Amino acid sequence: MARQQQVTRAIEDHSTAQDANLYLEQVNDQSGAAALYILDRSGETVASSNWNTPDSFVGEDYSFRPYFNQSLSGKEGFFFGIGVTTGRAGLFISHPISQHDTVIGVVVVKLELEEVEQNWQDAGETVFVADKDGVITLTSQGDWKYKTLSPLSTFDRARIENNRQYPGRELASLDVGKQLSKGSGIVAIDGQRYLFDSKPIKGSAWRIFYLTSMDQVTDRQGAVMLIAIIAGGMIILVILFLRERELKLASQREALEFARIQALNTRLEKEITEHRKTEEELRGTQNELVQAGKLAALGQMSAAIAHEINQPITAIRTFCASAKLMIERGKTEQLDQNINQISSLTERMGAITGQLKTFSRKSTGVLEPVDLKIALDNTLQLLKPQLQQEECTLERHEPDTPIVVHADLVRIEQICVNIIRNALDAMESSSPKRINIDLATNDTDVIMRITDTGPGMKEETLSLLFDPFFTTKDPGQGVGLGLSVTYGIVRDFGGSIKAYNTDTAGACFEVRLPLLKGKTS
Image 1 (cartoon, rainbow, N blue to C red):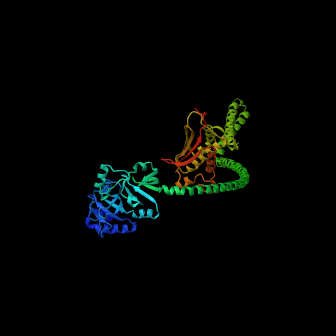
Image 2: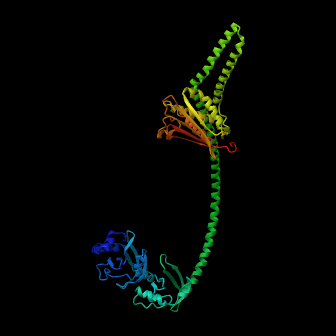
Image 3: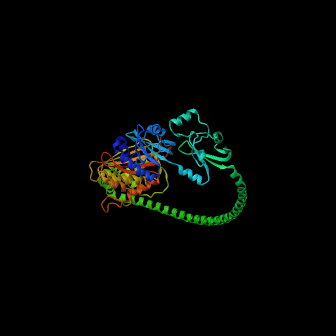
């Protein structure tokens, strides 16, 4: 209600109070409260749900009520007392009406609780509620109402009178406060002894007391004892029966559970065997893909390699023809120089074919310490002819110490070949062509970044880059397995790989592998 427009408008402009009267009357009919009304900052009633009754609150001044001052300070008010207008007791709950963080009035609901007392009386119960001053506000015993548990002090009595809380009531004392202070036990009121219990009422300083006459307690003790004995015997019989039944069911459950566990173990053993077989097949497939990727790479590099080998072969032919001519002319003193040149050229050819043989070998699948710098040296030695043919500049930045990872040399070389060849393909139409390889380490990882000067990659390409059979090349130029295989190899080594576009131009592949501790300085 404190947030309703009719209410705030009536506080600001009393001429609109009739709208608030009608609104409060409608809400009160639905809520079942005794009355709803709003007060301005002076405590005057601006509108009320009972505006059209002889006991209307409209125009009344309730600034003396504690609940008004509590809500005017921004808190919720709680007060029980006899209405000065109606003469009927009730519980008053108030709430501040705020606008722009300023309290402009108070809304109040009054609840009359005679129905609660009537329910207690109809049920034959002895119940009463006492407020924080010990005044009995609600009770099933009519002659106890508005009496106190202990005599009131002069100060408390004066405060109650100033608040006009219980006008016309004597507030005589039953003088049982000390007996009731224990919270439960036996109390004597008007010569009658009662067994009592009490509990605080949450959200207030009130307490509710429930009393039972000791005469009723004595009469019921015998019946309760007999019932307890009979019930105890029946409970023992039921417990014995249930115990026997539970043991039987437990035995059956254990047998079923044992059979279920046996079946589960059998199934798990079968699944583990199948999983191991599948894992071996997948690893073999990956090795075959690595090998196929190598052979495919060799095929695509064959033109550059053939050109690299063809040059020393041509030179050897020339030196052989020259040596033959020298022999025919008898100038054998210059043969040593020709033979040395031929030997040097054959060593060069042997180095190239040796690299081809090393690169084309199959992986053993055994992980061992591998110096990433050596693996990169082997890769670049193999790719050197293609880099020269593509007129691509390559720059390396790396520490002077070894960079050791726990891996397989053959598969590490395959990672480097796949990424560098991917960079060469990306720079097909770029000029100049340059590849930067940066090797670095931190406390846990080795980081290898291979950056090209190509046009970079689209966002959709980056998201699908490592998916099997995804390729941006023309049909017949690739099947889209190179980077997928590379991703699988890196994951097998416990590392990670990602690709992204650089801030300047081109793309960068970043590979992270766990650093083998104790192998670098």
